[in-house]
Amino acid sequence: MGICIAAAQSPSIAGDIDANLAIHLRFIEAAHAEGVELLLFPELSLCGYELPLLRDCLLTPDDARLAPLRDAAVATGMRIIAGAPLGDGALPHIAAITFLPDGTTTVYRKQYLHPGEELYARPGPMGAHCQEMNGQRYAQAICADATQYRHAADAAADGASIYLAGVLISETGYANDAAKLQRYASDFGMGVLMANHAAPSGGYAAVGRSAWWKPGGVLAAEVAGPGSALLVVDGQGGAYVVKPTGTGCP
Image (cartoon, rainbow, N blue to C red):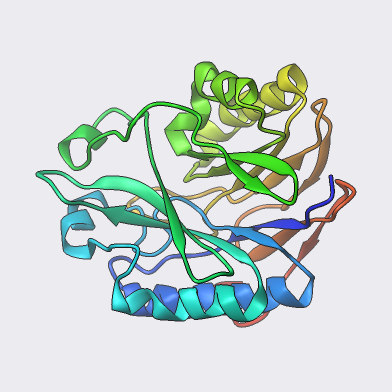
């Protein structure tokens, strides 16, 4: 595979961007110690999956509050993908900001909304929106995106070899959603990395169980349950779980 990537199974404090930034930085430190080149956080990791609070937590890629993440990306040489509400209109986007080692950013906006999210957010532009890294292409998905077969098919058609899903999944939805992610790895020959929340958020009891499916569909590693964890995928596609200390919940 050639790229060391990781899923940060992190907790989020409702509406507290400063506290969540501190959690992110501890995960980044742990990931850097493992040689990670790209770190994926869960859906809305910077504010929590708190739909009524999205407008109060609006961020922009160049927001001064996010300087620690920009600085961390430059200092570590890591791509850091953090979940955040972004907006310049009537309703915000549920989005993910990628902080790049050269100090710039890219943005991905959730395309498919869960029922009820349309009251608080609007969908982003459709399409694969793949990114290049070390000669490979990766595609991003935010939660409900990853439940849509077409979303993964478009990514594969655009040349993605890695599919990155930042999510919030509870116990009741996990089996169905995990089966879909495994199918994408099988049908499209993509490696699929899923980063779930470590603790309850927005009234949902996140199940954790962040996972990596190798191209072909084999489940290579899975976090045992909820709680803070770092799932690392090495450059050969093998994976292992690290329990970083001081990252917010047991």
